[in-house]
Length: 147
Image 1 (tube, helix red, strand yellow):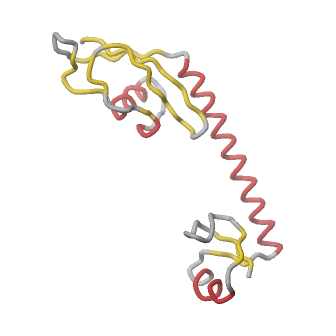
Image 2 (tube, rainbow, N blue to C red):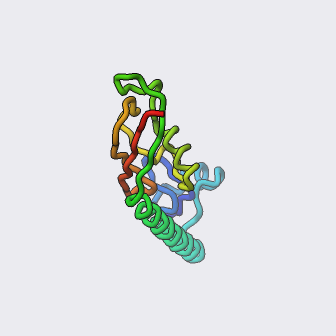
Image 3 (tube, rainbow, N blue to C red):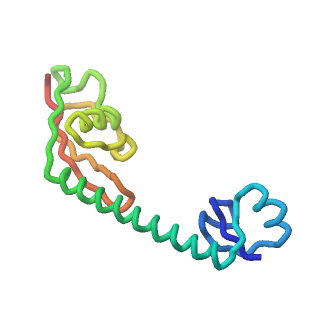
């Protein structure tokens, strides 16, 4: 029986995939739990419409991420911290601190989108990767200076 999955099911398929399953599995497991729809012409048209809307939304998100990345590529940020005479910071600058600073500057970037191998622990200039979308990456220049 052909069914349309409403959500990802391990070893069967992803959301909105049309898959072939045994009749009993569909009737006794998938349909009662609301995990699948029968693959009728009407449901297939409905799914095509949903897929088109999702792809348009993904494209819009990618374009917004590209615009943000282009703004960030030309930007340089300066953060002032207390440091020892050996230029070691008292503490460190991690993704959360950078996200908070960037939010104060008007850039809404989640901390998980800031790619730091390890927290910054010294004064200097650092290149930090920002990944606002899976297909879009930007490098920003972060200056860590003495307060």
